[in-house]
Image 1 (cartoon, rainbow, N blue to C red):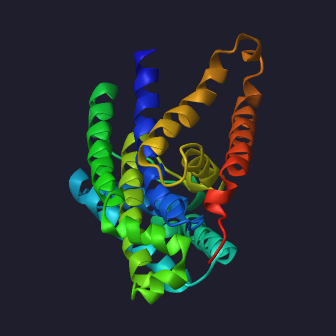
Image 2: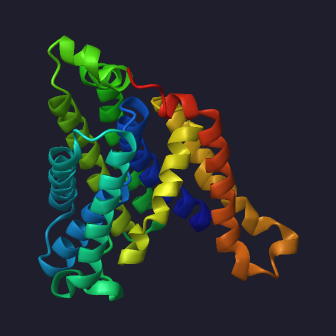
Length: 285
């Protein structure tokens, strides 16, 4: 039971950091990015390849994963930063599929659908690994909290409310969004690195588009743009479906638990979008 709770705790803090990075873009900037799971995957693959093929140390790989994801996040801005609303979402969706295709088809590096096994374990016990993930994630969250309280986020919110007014004040939308995406991408990469070290095996299915549903649900449930709301929502969304495991009459139907979990996420996401539709699909001035 203790190992199970440590397992949930480890995944929880990885996803809190990942969801918070999306919250900066979707919540504060009202930019519906579907590319964050791809950035998460890039960070994981950088760590897996660096650890398995090159034997790099953990701190170098965590930093390198963050930087690499930041570089690809900047590519999103340079190629799609001027697009509006649904067009931006479609562009980031295309980015996701390009990255997913690389994961699957660039077999000499990524091993294709077979994934990368044998990622070295950092610690011998689940408790030590949980403490490591907790400390790194908490450090990342503290930095993101400073970002949420900074002038950058204030400008990002201003652009979301009225880009015309912001431009009249000589605020460059592309520069502001570039900075936000670089920061967000960095912590996507860091969370991806922690994910790879924790599971010790990754493959393309871990970064399928369906995973974005989980992140968007967390951000919307926590109220878009709310830092602490996203933290609380992460506990709710990640841990609630686990309760299904302990429902007695479902114990004989374990084959449907995965589908039932996805159904719960879908229902939560539907009602979250309905209740917050004015916040995320506000009128463009």
